[in-house]
Amino acid sequence: MTLLASGVDSFAGIHPFLLVLAAAGLDRLVGDPRWCLHPVVVMGWWISRLRQLAESWAEGSPRRLRLAGCGITLLLVLGSGGAGWWLEQICHTRPWTWPLLLIALASALAGRSLEQAVQAVLAALTTSTELGPARTALGWIVGRDTTELSRQEILRAAAETASENAVDGLFAPLFWMVIGAALWPYGGPGPLALAWGFKAASTLDSMLGYRRGSLRWLGTAGAKLDDLLVWLPCRLVALSLPLVQGRTARRTLPLAQLALQEGQPDPSPNAGVSQAIYAHCLDVQLGGVNRYGERETQKPLLAAGAPAPEASDVERLLGLSRRLEVLWLAAALLVGAAVHR
Image 1: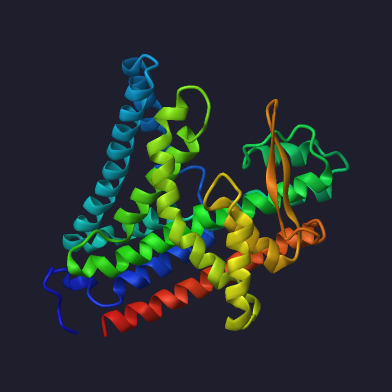
Image 2: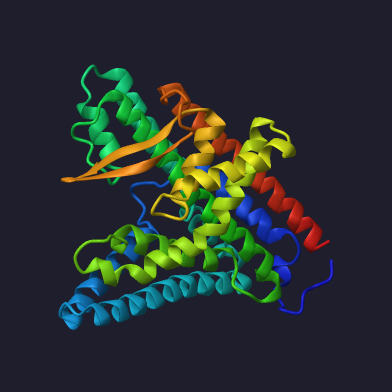
């Protein structure tokens, strides 16, 4: 194999794609161990400190808050991506650091942890006659008020968060890893640099991306960047998810177009689309009224008229995500083999 001009001889060819494959496997095997400090926790710590400094400096000024939000976004995304790139450079000269790079890459994927969190909700519904344990388990993974949800509403919320976070927590970072794997042999930022940069934007959105108080201005930059980085992976999920059900290409495109149409009224340019494609693939109705504290929000109905989701449908949803991840990884390996043939 011809060595690339970047000098990354040990990572030439398909090796970066194999590294992404190994990271996905490690994520599915161990998830996010509680004893290990997670990079997202570190990002969250920095966001909290930077927010305090920004709000103190801005003194309530919307213009200053927007400017500070841009600064926080720039610092965190470039800092996180730079830390990933630094670790990648260390691996060029110190092969024994490969396991650390692999663990760091796996930390950017949330396939196993999302599945465990959703299954904890389903288990609570199965093992307890009371809804309290299921509401508590659900409250860890959704932003809506869960204290008065019925069993059917709990299942709908579980299906919606599983479909939305499959894109945000699994397929979007996996997409950017693959892009990094393609760039790395040519001297560009590699899979960890792009994955951690994406996770920084995603963490900013989850912590600051709210339309209340000072966050209406402070969180704008991070939320917009996260929307931008998720936009293409979300549409790729809409195009590829029907394929893992065995649907033909002729039926896949109209279904993806329907998901785009039904998801458009959602305030998020991506959440509605990701939920809509899962709803149509599973033939269940999602969307409706959500309560956030004392505020109610009417989300668009997705696959309107279909049956409400049951526990078995949520399990099928998780299974679809697993199969789609395998499809994406197989496609990435084929691309890697073709690009670096």
